[in-house]
Amino acid sequence: MKKPLLLLMAMASILAISVLSGCIETESETVVEDEKIESMIWNFTDPLGGKVVLGSEPERIVTMTPALTEIMNAVGAWEKVVGCDSSSDLPPEAKELEHVVSWQGLDAEKLVLLKPDLVIMDRTLDITDMIYTEIKELDIPVYRIYPKNISDVLNAIRAVGELTNETVNATAVIDDFVERMNAVSQAANEIAEEDIPSVLHVTYYDGTADPWIATDSTFSGSLIIIAGGECAISDSSGYGVQMSLESIIESNPDIIFCSQSSSWPTLTRETILGDARWSDINAISSDSVFDVAGDWCDRTGPRMILGLEEFHGHIMDHVEA
Image 1 (cartoon, rainbow, N blue to C red):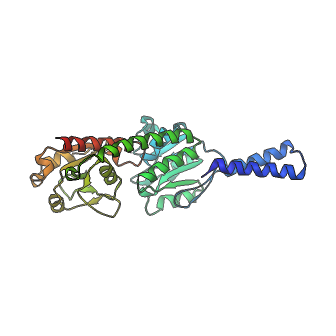
Image 2: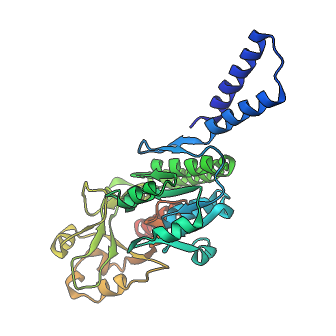
Image 3: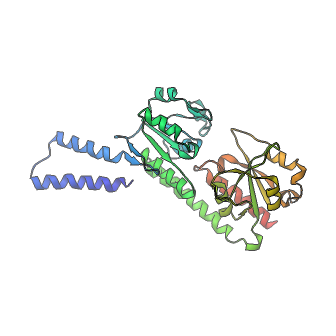
């Protein structure tokens, strides 16, 4: 939302009315006009077309995903967060907040008791709109993001900055992200086409079922490509998918990344290395199977830049070996 433009237009209208009428504004009239301007500033339309009517700057905000909690912290609005989801762990203080949503669903009673001015959520984790509908029925304002690429993530950071009146900080976060991303991209562009490695990102595998894979249409896939690699598995779903082991063996990746989460540790790498069926894959024979920080590449927040840099480091080590 173009707040400065709206503010200038509103102020210009007030000035024009005063001049044309030849009247001097009274103090009460000024208060009324100020209230109108304030109301205009704090009304938003989210990326899904939802109207978010706040009236004034929100002071009590609930975040519904770890990435959104991280964004609030990154833009300097942490003190406004009064509740979050059960997986939020950055900043560490998030673990001490009331957790209003988990894999089991929404705890509407907790949410109501927090008396939030605003709930910020990601439709990616509520694709049926069930939780969104439940919150709206409680008459609580909801702003939703729905990021599908890195540009959407940066726009989400910008939006949170506007919602919390922290646009300067949000812009600084975005600028730093873009500068570092461009540095990685420029270095990756120097890799000769024949040296670009095939990269497989396994988000979960325990040996009892087909591995879960982040394909080229996911955020992780886009990070791999920017970092200088080529995704071993192509898919258009935009989400992690289960892929048969036969398909993975056929794709024969040069590098395998295994997600490792701080909140949900896995043994994916150990399981792959201990499974004889994977042994003929290039990545295994070249000792190029790495744990990577899942919180950096799976969460659509400001730390995705760390995931990109981690991917790039492993890819460059492989290219230069």
